[in-house]
Length: 256
Ligand SMILES: NC(=O)c1ccc[n+]([C@@H]2O[C@H](COP(=O)([O-])OP(=O)(O)OC[C@H]3O[C@@H](n4cnc5c(N)ncnc54)[C@H](O)[C@@H]3O)[C@@H](O)[C@H]2O)c1
Image: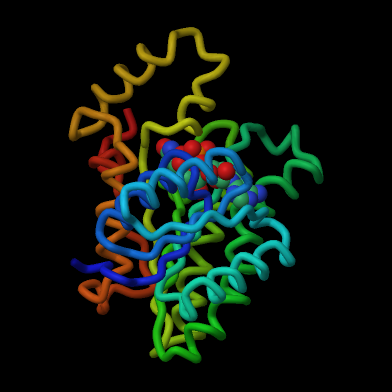
């Protein structure tokens, strides 16, 4: 199995896409470290996976803070002595036009979505370079490519990640492979939160969206997890400095 015995750290691993990835990687035999700022779900997931005979540790982390990221990386190294892959997936969503912009929303969105990835890269790359190899996988979004109404900062944060992927891959070439996954509409608590304030119940909104997506359904965390496992594996060793879109064909739709 492609991830058997690989040490994989997943940020935002207690909900939605990250939780789906943790469950899938662990089922493939990876030694999974679950990092997030949701303590109870993290401890419960660690316990559940261990009870099933899988290898999992939860590390409470605020990825927007350097000291917390440094400790997340140090604890992963302490558990396993190496880090084969990091999936930088933690993210927050915020709605708002530039006319509603303020420092607090910048700190929240850029802190969790972008600064976190730079802190993680800063602390994990020396370990991967020392090992001679490692993979950093970053969850971006189709929002990096689309002008979603009232989402300027969220879209900008995801576009920044696509630039960071290219730059990290170039700067640390030969030892660290860096790739992105760009999900479309995935059925997670974050997606449900984006439906608040609309004039229809969530189920109806989801059905409308599913009818438009070329594969005629919303994505599930497992759809992302399967691609993520491949990208983190040695089988994807020639995929580097690029972002794979996982949107069921949404980006191919005409704009009317
Ligand atoms: N759901 C979608 O349709 C969709 C589409 C495109 C991209 N994404 C991206 O996928 C990623 C996962 O989103 P999701 O839909 O699973 O959302 P989610 O809200 O279900 O999960 C987000 C996770 O990030 C963690 N997190 C948030 N702030 C954190 C912090 N400061 N420190 C540590 N962990 C923190 C949360 O605890 C949670 O585990 C995000 O980066 C999101 O932007 C989601």
